[in-house]
Image (cartoon, rainbow, N blue to C red; front, side):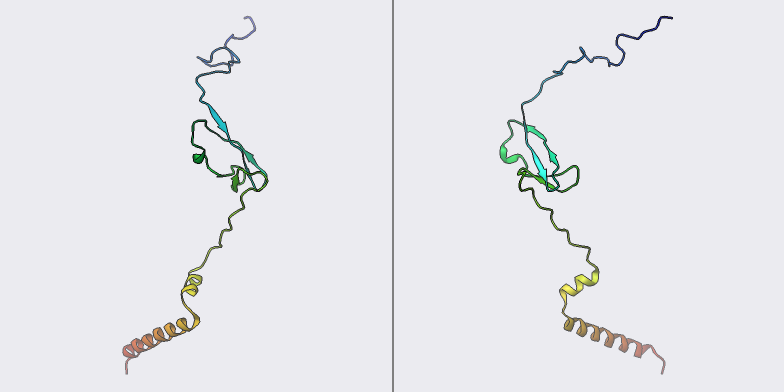
Length: 121
């Protein structure tokens, strides 16, 4: 059997001539550059006929997740995320120490009154 290969080896059906660059209609595009605080650059393309107000000012960086803006010298800062709050922390925001003491005394009085009725004499 003769050695060698097929003439279409490594190509797909309908691929067209090898090295063909124009494979269909390309819409006019605008490339916009964004930088994050860590120095990552991304450059998505937008339709050239889009209103400039519709192009976002800030995107999320695909590398680190920080916000990325159009100004390379002044990228947007990372928004500080508050740590998880416990139920007690939320209660302390709503009540003062004096209110808490009053509520506790009322609850204990009610509990003692119920227990007093339940205990045999």
